[in-house]
Image (cartoon, rainbow over all chains, first blue to last red; front, side, top):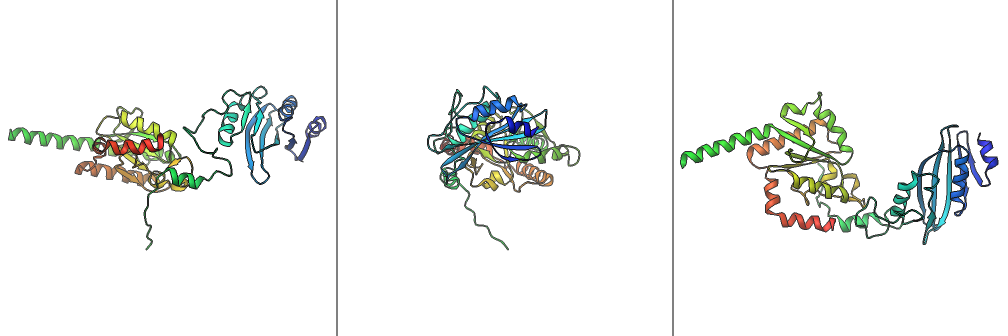
Length: 157
Length: 172
């Protein structure tokens, strides 16, 4: 089954195992790759998330798809530039991507075009700093500035 | 009048004694700490032999048990729930996350100290506290009620400005 998928996909397959393929696509063809994979019995979106590659100045968008029929996982990866990141919505292909996209836009600052709730507040309330899952966000500094800690000397006998 | 005072004093004493033996607990389970509560309140450790039972509404509860880490979103709800409760009411901070942040001390989301925002009567230290430690915390709260020292709810009324200022600092 995996060989059939690889044959009919016009994208680069960077890894192939018994029950898993990893597909790497360009940023513009992310949605069309998912659409093609949905036609090849990958009916379920397990997760849609982003990874921050700060040295390469890129975000990697990762979608993990699952095929109930063939019990195969397909991981679709794409890289987008880190400044002014934006991506097309995939809710027309997988409707459950809706919340993942809102979370991604809040945690990484990636704008999702076509999702009406992208950029709105989801988990964080009144957040005014950098998006917290970016690598250049200093979590310890933010925590010490905003939340008071208990200054206790610990004594060991 | 003297007789009246004696009766009133005795009445209050009896009330306190009854109160400490019938504490209903609102367990606000924000995090992993909730997993220690089922063995505490079911047959193995059986907290009900001390008169402590879990309850579902804030209006009828006496104890607010905050288990685990608190972030901005939950703190707002905890404050609302605490203000809905009727006095006398007691707060128990459960686990090291409520004391100093625990393992989430460097997190951007976790509020480190509960006692800045609500008057905490008893802290139960540990990550996680065992059911025995939880019951020990309940017993020390009962002891404090017996001695008349569990006055957190009075403190919340008297120092309301202090608590409200701290809450405003993080909640905005």
